[in-house]
Amino acid sequence: GAVVSQHPSRVICKSGTSVKIECRSLDFQATTMFWYRQFPKKSLMLMATSNEGSKATYEQGVEKDKFLINHASLTLSTLTVTSAHPEDSSFYICSASGGGYYEQYFGPGTRLTVT
Amino acid sequence: AQRVTQPEKLLSVFKGAPVELKCNYSYSGSPELFWYVQYSRQRLQLLLRHISRESIKGFTADLNKGETSFHLKKPFAQEEDSAMYYCALRDGEGDNAGNNRKLIWGLGTSLGVNP
Image (cartoon, rainbow over all chains, first blue to last red):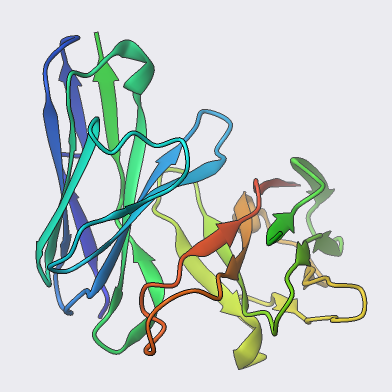
């Protein structure tokens, strides 16, 4: 149990375009999903916490208009990187908790490259 | 301020040697601490949590409130233990079920076990 998927696994987009990343809990209802960036030296940065049906809570320094998060159902949250720039290139990871699962369960990550 | 410190970015040991990955925390209340592991090309996964007092893959971690530490230990390291290890502290804020309580992360320690 507690499987989280992400799609796509990797994406390349051009500067100025937007890209959407999906995070799904496959076998449980995730009341909360978290979005992270993982940097080249592997440090993790929490970007935002999203609860189903309500607005996401962004961490300090994360632009909510740039990183749009939607958590419209108990099994799906999306992160949209708007007007992407090369510095947005990173590894984005989601995690989910809820539905009887107290810990966070992680997706496999999405490698975003902005050219 | 709530904080998790992993003082070692890199740790290298030989197979069969004992290993200790250090984690110190700063938290005003009663802490909930976790160790997560990320093997090469795999997703983050929970290794163990202090409330379970369990041993997973030969690893143990004891919460020492006096020293505010939660060091991860294994008496005999194996090559397959080579991975990135993160210590995390559950934040106190959240709903009654605790589902949306974010994790405060250390920067991680990369463990390499040499043959």
